[in-house]
Image (cartoon, rainbow, N blue to C red; front, side, top):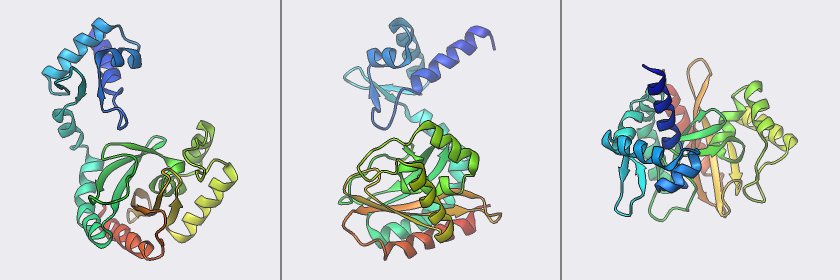
Length: 245
């Protein structure tokens, strides 16, 4: 691969990385601003990405991630295998609660949705499959952080604890205390940490070695009692854990 090819590949990933769950549809001008690339370069990259199915151009001239890219991403071994094992248990949890049921893994300093099931009347939450959440402000993220080791915690603290609601954990003392509780009990409840009006319960999914590889959570209206949800979420997490290699 030539140096020009490497440079072009890097610029293509800059364009693709500009799309987020909050902004899944962008114009060429927006892509130029987000990437810092000249508009003619963005125009050329978008054309090539559309030709290869990585982007799709919609009627109003904006772009969105193409199905081909999603197909390739779904082949990632960590997400694909885990989703296959987890789905029956997530469906059981969904049937029992009729609320938002989620499976997340850690990707750097964020929690990445790899599956989410939602009922039509379920409480509205941030994110969707393929979206990301902050570790310190989401129930699944806190579970992953609790079992992620000292280096990860130090990196999260160094990055800063952004406030999303009045209830978000924003101090080191409170975060460390919460993580200690998670390691002791094996679950966590978060009332309005990320979204006002929501309550989340999460538990870890682990390998036979004890390594935590994911977290299962359910999100319900904030006024609900979490007590009946805790055993259901933990049972789903244990079921998935038994099937994880």
